[in-house]
Amino acid sequence: MLVYQTTSTVTLFLKPNPALGVPIYLQLKEQIRHACETGALRQGDSLPGIRNLAELLVINPNTVARVYRELEQEGVLDLRHGVGAFVASSGTVTRWTAAKAGQMKAAQKTVSDLVAQLQERGFDADEIRRLVEAELASDTSRKSRRSSA
Amino acid sequence: MRQHLALQTAYAIETDGLTKHYGSFEAVCDLTMRVAKGSITGFLGQNGAGKSTTIKMLLGMIRPTRGQARVLDFNAINEKESIEMRKRVAYVAEDKRLYDYMTVRQIIGFTKSFYPNWRTDIEKRLLDDFRLPLDRATKKLSKGMRTQTALLLALARGAEFLILDEPTEGLDPVVTEKVLQLVVGAAADGATVFFSSHQIAEVEQVADRVLLIDKGQLVLDSPIEAISQDYRRIRCVYDEPPPLSALKLDGVKRVAVEGRVVSVLASHNAHEIAGQMGKFAYGHRVETFPMTLKEVVLESLKRD
Image (cartoon, each protein chain N blue to C red):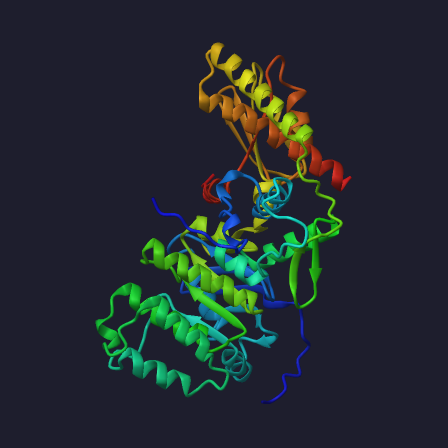
């Protein structure tokens, strides 16, 4: 088995998948939030530079810049001019508490019950996936309508 | 260096009604587009759709039949201005042409001598990455190596605008990813990139904006993120199909009626459209699906 060990935060990030139907900037934003919530990234940790992250993930640098900017506005990151991006020390992202971890577990149970129920009714995995995706897609178009209104 | 006095705009490319006829054949037809400075734009289209003709008109290599084109605020159709513009633009042609009699080392030395802003760091990095055989004559290079040599020459010039005609065509996946990495890196340095491609996935991955040309006409011009955020396929089964006039709504790009199923391609406004479609569906559910760039492109190329 090969084991790599590094102190860099670069390896935390996965290449976004354009085929998911979720904009790449949202996928990256979600990844960074998630890393903060699970404690993989903590207060004061530095994030890769815009150029480095763009090259590593092979995505548009404007996308990375936008994600950093939005996360700064949301209080997740601190952008220090000429130095880089850091996880904000007065962060608005709270690490998952035991309670939140419990909620996630409960939600997972809800989903697995729902999937089991639908399978019992004869739906296959593809149909279930389509139902969930259709639901989320109509949900995001509702949301984007609300925000543009 | 002589100061460029023309008004600076936010656009690296601005065309208005750009048209090229070859006899009775319309290669490019009334093309009006804007490419923002500092952006990465993917230029898609089938073979013969007019991609290379457009690029050559932008570079002053082909004279348009009519219309206007400005590149980096220079009038691309005026010969003098076009020369000034080309000093700032690096172009990699579709055929990746090189001086065949030179070795890789010679062609790098030769090209370097023309460009005061030559980036030795980029040259070194790319030579390492690509492992090009420095002493081989360029005519004996494989297709992938020719492309890599052409890209090295273009990128190390430190140009502010890269125009790449199918830069990843014929390259293996590892080298393709390296080329895309270079494109992304050049954009991070502030360069504008305009590249044509057949690879929808790579455009989706690195571009800010996608342009799609079909039979010389622009049929899609959209920010990439609008595709996953706003484009939707909305479908519903009907016992009695609704009057099509009821579907003339903002955002409806295309309506297909196949038997009892009506499916709508929406560029935006999906929620409203789905609501309207639901009014005519008794007992049936309106389904909304996200779309990938590939689906949107294929839909846009469908002939009526």
